[in-house]
Amino acid sequence: MLRKGQASIETIMSIMFVLFILIIIALFANERTKEANEIQLRLDAKTVCISLADNINNIAEQGPGFYKYFSLPEMLYGVTDYNLTVYRDFVEVSTQDYTWSTQTVTSNVTTYCMDKGPFKKNKVYDDGGLIYIICNKPELMYVNDSLWLTYANGSLWPPNVYRNQSVNLSIKVMNYGPVDSGPFWVRFNGTTARKIDSLRSEETIEVPAFQMNASSISGAMLINISIDYNNSVNESIETNNNYTVSLNVI
Image 1 (cartoon, rainbow, N blue to C red):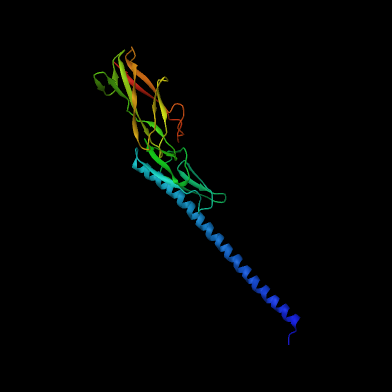
Image 2: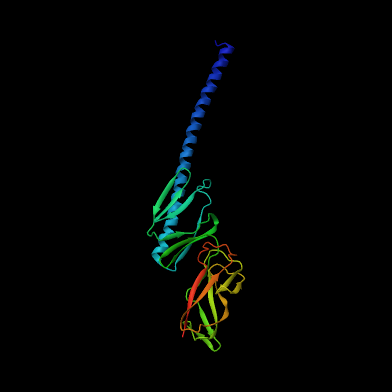
């Protein structure tokens, strides 16, 4: 027959043994959970990387003028920060402990910015065979070949003007960015400016005409155009606001 003290020691040993087994099981389960989370994190990273590469490839294959919007998750697997970069003909995703990349069909890709978050739109587009990526900001552009010349008796196109002739000129500006633009100014030849109160995403507007006198010498007459010349609008690309177009003086 067991004495009371001996029975207590055996009970304690049994409890300790059970606790030891439970700790081993918990450690094993935790390790498996970490492995599963790591696998899911890497799958998520690959998905984001491949998705961007597919968008680039799709636009490059369709050609100039095509574009596509895309969004990026704030975090990978909801918890891990990451970097997404495009270099040469590769897209690369990286975290503190992991890096993975995939190839694209073109190396003509310029990334100005990309924003993360489900409600922030990025845009990839083809401009003359060059692929650009911009983020969730306005992007003001001069519409090519939109310079319009008006005489008192009508309009002419292409822009021809007689020497010393007084004419009215106008252009078109487009907001190519994913979000609307606030007010901005368009300046002609460094002096005359016209204010645009707002411009929605994908919207094109004709900037009010300004008057000028043509050169007294035949040939090309250059007109300098600055869109948002005082940088009042935060754009994805701030280096493409100045344009030079020409009038043919005859």
